[in-house]
Image 1 (cartoon, protein in one colour):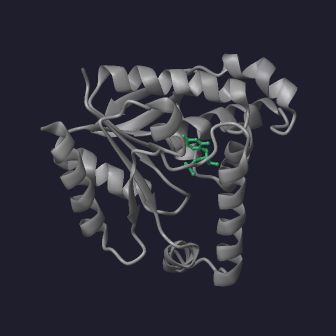
Image 2 (cartoon, protein in one colour; image 1 turned 135 degrees about the horizontal axis):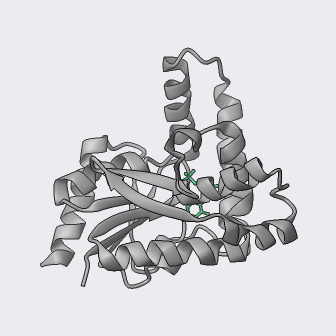
Image 3 (cartoon, rainbow, N blue to C red; image 1 turned 180 degrees about the vertical axis):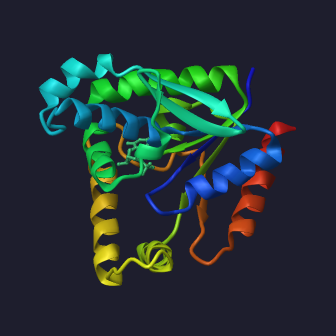
Length: 222
Ligand code: DC
């Protein structure tokens, strides 16, 4: 049986940064499920399919063959045989991903892939519904969050460091709007699993959060 850690939480809570470090320290693979929704969104955008047209998305999603490989310890997403990692963070793809991810058929297809990966490898998987839907039997579950003000400030610092102009209040408003959408959608909304440990990273360093999760995981592994 493989050992699985589920990490859920809102956008910008630091899930991927933390999960990557925990993966390295505990020799697990890191499974980024958001990247799979992004790859599905990229497929639709490329096909010229309006992601708000649910019927067309459902009709076409089976044509998106999404597979995951690990190269030099990094997750690489293949879309119909092409490495698309470099294309998944574009704004257009982020926005489309949040729309395709509300569709039940898309979720079923990607959840099946996620469950297959978790069954065959020791992993830490992050997303929105991992502890509740994808891996309800995960060995350890973490709900990682931070206040919207702190998440907005982190994003603001990231963008200004890149020389991009941005408005802190606008970023916070966008984050709150996205949280609302994620928590109130009909299919697999963002929700803390009953048996998940709640970790608020607002006033913790990355190292503190990583160590907290390792402690939780090691207790479960014994
Ligand atoms: O974590 P992320 O920003 O890369 O996720 C991209 C989109 O996919 C985001 O709108 C939330 C959605 N998502 C989801 O619905 N379920 C998951 N398990 C992971 C991501």
